[in-house]
Image 1 (cartoon, rainbow, N blue to C red):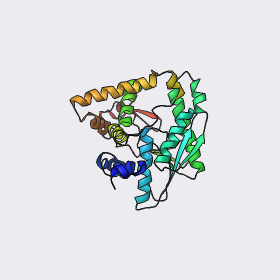
Image 2 (cartoon, rainbow, N blue to C red; image 1 turned 90 degrees about the vertical axis):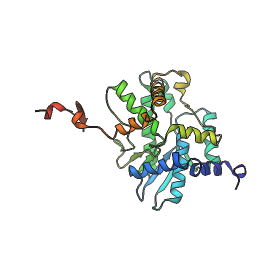
Image 3 (cartoon, rainbow, N blue to C red; image 1 turned 120 degrees about the vertical axis):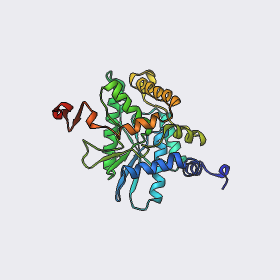
Length: 277
C-alpha cells in the first residue's frame, strides 16, 4: 500500500517500524529488555498526557502488546487535570485517529496548582502521579508507563547536580512508595527526543506542548527555565563532542564508589572517611 493511500493510524504505525525502526522501535524494545520492565501477566496503564512523548509511547506499547511472545495487558488512560476544552479535544482527536482506546478521568489539579506559589511544578507532578497510580489500580493494573525519554533522564541528572547539589538519576523503573504492589516504568528511556520530534514532523502530527494553566500565565517559570537552560548546555556541548549525551547517560551506570566522598543509602548518609583508615 502506498503511503498516500494509508490512514493516519497506518502511516504512524508504519513509520515506527520502518523509517524509525532503529532510533525508536529498537531502542524502545532494548530498554524494556535491559531493565526488565515487563513480565508475563502484567497489566500496564499507559499514561497519555497528550504530548508527543506519551502518544508515541502509546503506539509502541500497543504494537508490543500485539506481537509480544508472552501475555500482558494494557490500558490507555488520560487524566484530565483541568484542560481547556480545545486541549481536551486535541487529545481525543489524536487518540481517535491513531486508534488508541483511551479511558479518561477528571481531576482538579490545575485549579489547586494555579494558586501554589512555591514549586508548583513539583506539586503538580506529585498530584498527577498519585492520581494516575490510583486510577490504574482501580483498573487492576500493577504498573504505569510514562513517556520520559533519554534526554529527560540526562537533563534531570544535571539539574540535580547543578541546582540540587546531589547526584540523582531518573530511574528507568521504580516501585511506588505510596501504592503497594504498583511500579512505574519508562519504556522510552533510551529514545532520543530529537528522533521523537522527527517522527512527529514526518507524520505531520500536532500534539499538546504544555497545557498547564500556570505555565500559560508564566512562560518563564523557574522550573521550566532550568530545564531549558540545561537542554541548551547539553546541545552546545554536543556540537563539539557528539558523545556528550551518551557519556552523561553512561556515567549514571559507572559511579565509582571508591572515588565518592559521600553517598546516601536507605536514608542513611555515609562518608568515605568511614573506611579510610
